[in-house]
Image (cartoon, rainbow, N blue to C red; front, side, top):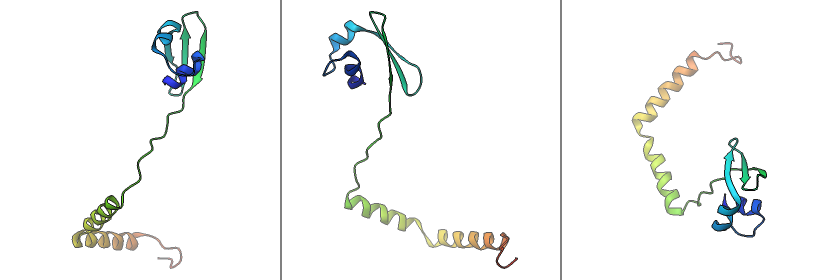
Length: 100
């Protein structure tokens, strides 16, 4: 936001005193559109793009921990329940190739 404000003001870097002196208020028109209302009556429209969150890459330790957690979640009871559910789905589904 500060970078965009500096751009609207035509200055290389955001400055609080210049901001307070030259900008009356900023209106949010939509999720992506801002209107800068200057103290001299001028308005400047700007489109804003929400920056993507950049997540740090997983460390090898975290990757191993996650892999182990996933493997541990597939208990024999859970595998049995999944197997029974798939058997039920297959028995109820109409298979075009076998006409069953």
